[in-house]
Length: 449
Image (cartoon, rainbow, N blue to C red; front, side, top):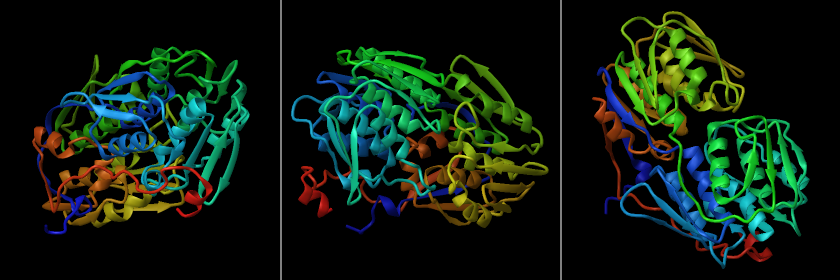
């Protein structure tokens, strides 16, 4: 044993190669995690296809097992079978929730199924506060009683009742939790100012396949007729639009020609519009998007907003492309306040980005030079790899475990496109461990956490 671990892994990226070829997209991280949670709503088995093999999914699978559900791969591919039969627990262990904010999404289905849930306050990427009060106030509107004590959220209900739930902000997580809880509520629930992301539409399609009655998916007002019996479903996860955007940006940055396969271009409409404004050639087909570039890049201004606005999850990677543009661009971050945490590392490569509050000023064009950098979070890590692909010399991206949370086989897919990239310093890959503590949600266990 050399003492190495997956946290020691790093990516070695040698820049200067044009990326060319096709990338078959994986299932969307931000959808797969929620569909896995939604499988808790029924005692029947659910089959979920095109599940990305990433560490966040591994964590969610471990979470489901800790809750008492069976969650097992089918064959050698990307298919998971989840069976939440009898013996389901309402306690989501701290050891798992602290590593992934998306874990809070089990709260809605647990309350719907069991009438109670105890969830540790969530962790995850350090990109600023993602308020859970939208989740809490929404569930209270449905009749749930909620207490927060010793870092845990305790939810109890003697029977959820449909209600009109206006969200102050179109929170994706709150919309998803409310959608799942509302399937068990007596009467109709109306979510106003609901999130409109494609992943919300995928969850609604999954729930409809289970027997739920939902109208308005993809709009800001969603109606759920509660109390319908739910059964198992066989469903394929939509393609990951953030993965697609990342590879398209990498292709444009290297003056290459890259095609993503599997995604409806409508899911990236504004993003593709901005690429065209920068001078990138964009071709759209049925579940195909191709970018190419053979000329200079023009500066553009970008403001991140909830869908259908410009996705915050593509902001850091786009910043790299803008650093190559001939002129000054401004990015305004309106979703997460710490999304600029990667700027210091990009500047180590020569990006020359200045930030003030929630604005970043990118003055290009810049010549990037390889060095050693640290991935601060998932999307920031992808941005550093993007920068390394165009930088002179070798770039070493450390803390690659952040990237592994959301990108399936990034190294392999980049090599298919012709990139010179490899992983190093890695010990044996391991699955998240089943928590030894918090097997129950009694007061003593919670207080000792």
